[in-house]
Image (tube, rainbow, N blue to C red; front, side):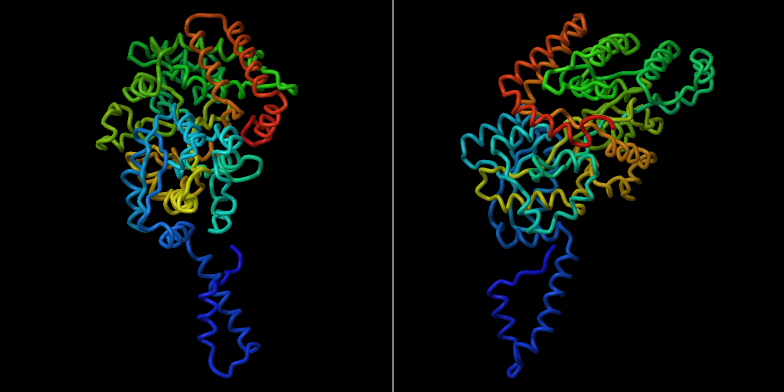
Length: 499
């Protein structure tokens, strides 16, 4: 933060305190000391406190409106951060709950209407090129510098900071949710001597957490054969197309796939894509019956009830499996964990997990209270407040700052929390960013429809050829060169493809 700028009132105050007979030249050293003292005070303040102090002057008695995902996520601003902000600043927070699938449309509709109904926004990072190009998001750099937040942004974990904050080098959002896929596995099963001996005899290598998809297939099939009589399958997964979209993006790139060639022609139908689809079909044979229809909840129930030795999902699975939230009323829909204390955490095969969806905090360009909205999201996202928010038992914000992964209080939430946080931190360094283009939703929808066709029994190559044609048609409608520029900017980010 730069040297403090005095306003006219402060300048007059300094002049009025000048002793009679003291010349201007003699006063200069004293003024320098005062200026340095002010800078020291400003730098000593936390980013959260700077936001609070500024908000008290311009926000008190006013109301800002923020768009938030409906459901558990919204309990954060409704029950914790909104009331706390009002208590600290006098500014009220109105929360507009919108289902995730409708958030992009609602934000764009309000922007085009220009009513200023929204002040602050939650956006999925993959939407940012679309929203920025449309003009729906306010560029935040001037506020970041004005309120001394730039240095604290650097402590956001690198993959989120470097991939989910900027468009064309300008800040439009603060990464605020460490969504990353984690492999969860049954430590007790992998430690069983009978299973280790039998697996080694069959495959010639030790039974351990799979680091490749070939190992995942070997281990999953073996465990199903060995444990099915105990009601346990080697693995489970969510296969519902909406979730499968993210699973495909991760695995396709870990298998060496690229989404487009140098001419912006879709290459999703490459051998890597065909391999992913074909392997999925084979893997379903050692997973629970009906897995093709599993979504987040179905897969969660299967794992928590002890019916799967491995699964891959977002960070909340780890907290739910530990059972430390069992008495939280808002989570009474979560099945009781039968595997608490038996779960290990690791990166998925390939070592580059998907940063699937996630949320970032932005300011609506049509807001009539941009500065007030900015101060609220700086406070929310700050080191001090975010460390409290990611530990809320009823909300779903996941750790996203370096300090979150080493937070002593978090490590005490359950016996294996330290190992859980270590897995999240590993993912924060090697994670893969969701594909982000103009009209990303059109590309994702074609992929989702293709996954539905796969579960209906159609040929993987034929499906992927159709998806590639649809992607190319969307690219032509957007404009090949225009989309190519957006894709190249995305592909240049550290989280686009495995290094």
